[in-house]
Image (cartoon, rainbow, N blue to C red; front, side):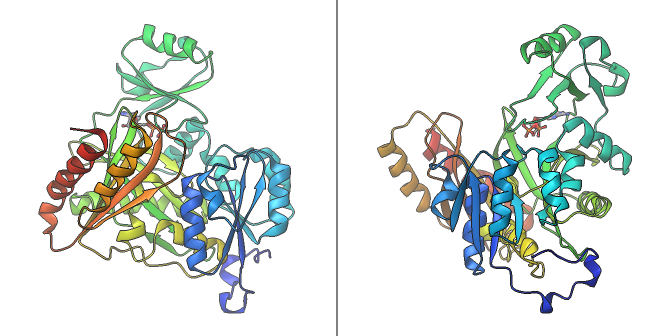
Length: 398
Ligand code: ADP
């Protein structure tokens, strides 16, 4: 099914029911999408090359191919009515002709085109008036424009594409270090940006449907260690001004993009309560995993609802607050991991999500969400961090 060109003209009540949606990628995000789809009576077909991927067990069926294999995505499109993405490792030029044939991508290729390259994303974010760290493009170390990146060191060097979990992000304290990183990475074109001494990192998950309706989830605080997300807390304990800035950023971005889908916007909060955009992910995101238990409609249900043309779900919290802790791979054996997971599940209010991936130190293997009730807003962060310490002591040892 292809939707009408003018989204304002769609009468959803008259649309044939969407029964099958495709997902490009088979990792944990697709796995959680498949579970949400099932609860709505919708099948999810997954494109992945790996039989061991988490989503394979939950998917209605699979197209066995690499995520950047656009021919395979065309095959996927023949079997479903809309296609969502689980990651950004796709080949947009190859997908464009498929989109031109009327296949419905969520988000549309035109939105993805502005966001997949970190330098182009920064340019777009700046051009639509959103606050960002200073940045410049660097083809060779001689290009480094210190004035553009805050006037001095440190600076942050970022690979333009295919970075994740801090892979492709490095902090440099001198021109020599910038040059060394550039050499180590094989002399690519990189984005260099101002180092922001943030007081907190925040994330906002926002959804927009084909009619232009927008729903914004409660602001989430995320905590990274070695540039990898370790935990998330919602709602973030921030001032009303900060909350408004986050919501305005989300609404401005989604409207400017004419976006369709679920987007995660990672943000820096400065000591003087300014919010800067770090990164935009055009998909469901690790920071929003806690929405499964804590929101009336999770980010995963939301993307399925949007792809299926159903009205947006309610993103508000169904509890006083929630904590999500990532379970990163350790050197523990499987027996120990099983025992640790049982201990985690026994924590009051906890739900353990286990992706079933092969264990490797540092790899995201699962997450725990804990919901809280009867906690005063001012006490939530301390309470959540205390429970996080308890979880991490069980998982990593104290
Ligand atoms: P990835 O795409 O791998 O998630 P990010 O660009 O989000 O990479 O960076 C990962 C982490 O590195 C951020 O969450 C933040 O902690 C840190 N970081 C990234 N950019 C900056 C910056 N400009 N200033 C300070 N810290 C940064």
